[in-house]
Length: 257
Image (cartoon, rainbow, N blue to C red; front, side):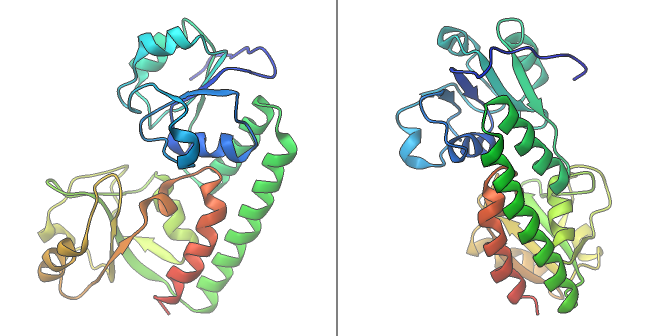
């Protein structure tokens, strides 16, 4: 965002407004420091109830956040709105991540580790993520997965993950090539999906909660492709969830051999 952020170090009153980064903060060993989070920051669930909820990622309760008097807010450029962030940064330091690739995610983990005085813990998480995803790439190459895929995130209208997204990079890490060549999250019709020459259509559990009934609907329209439900958190959360995602993708790849 082109500005310098100065904080009291280490921060003692943190508000996190991105679910995957909230989970990361808890996994780095912070507990009493996290005083506010969004209604979507449900992991770990046992920590969720005891924290003040400050709205949703796209619609923050600005007045409530001000009342909490945080000494650091941690957000993300895609998840949060510019207007909310610009209003909040007048009152307290706001640090933003901007993530498009696995490397970006690991860089963010390291930077947040520095911010909250948990560098060794962050380095260990990055070690596990790096080793795990290197193995995943190797296995995908060994088994020649090389699938052409579309990853749907919404229905009515259908929307897919396109290029220049973290999801696109995660697909590539698992031997899959995204057939959606448009940028970001374009709308598309089932007819367009039919002509996209995809071998695999993945239906995400979030933000739209695709279910078994939607498989039949899409399979009927695109009969030549395999349609699967997948865990959206594993594909799109970019904090410490990536450690758990490694095992998920080992099992996922087995279905594609």
